[in-house]
Each structure stands twice: as C-alpha cells, then as structure tokens.
Amino acid sequence: MADEELNAMIEELCLSKAEEFRLIGYEHVTGKEVWECVSAGYVKTGQPGLHKMVNDILSLKVTQFMNHMTLSAYKGTSF
Image 1 (cartoon, rainbow, N blue to C red):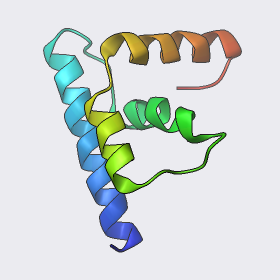
Image 2: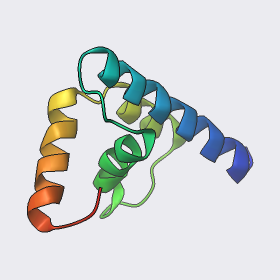
Image 3: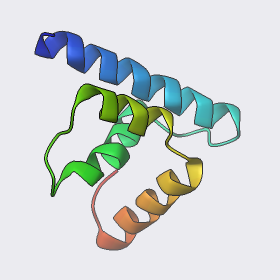
C-alpha cells in the first residue's frame, strides 16, 4: 500500500471517529486531534502495523481522548 493511500485511509478513519464524538456531544473534535491522541501511544514503540492503527482509532473511547487532551493542556502542547 502506498503512503498516500495509507495516509488517506487513516485520515478518513480519524474524521469518522471525530464525527462519532461530535454526535455524542463533543462538538469541537477534529480528525487531527484524534490522530494525535492515537499516535501518542506510538512514540516509544514506533508505528505499528495497519491493523493495530485501525483498531486503535476505531476503539478509541471519548474518556481516553479527553484524558489525552487534558494532559496535553497541562503540558502546554498545542492541540
């Protein structure tokens, strides 16, 4: 799979998850923020296989996402 195809697929999944969060009341979530949350787990281990990334995006819970956003705010990183 080409990098462009992989990036497009990951972006589409993140946008879908952001839309899911918006449907349950978290109106300002973006696909980029979803990816930043999911990819934060890959800093130490490196980027995993496609199946793991897809699973991590689709199984992301809003509580995990909000914890990540809160920690990012405390650390002063932009989101």
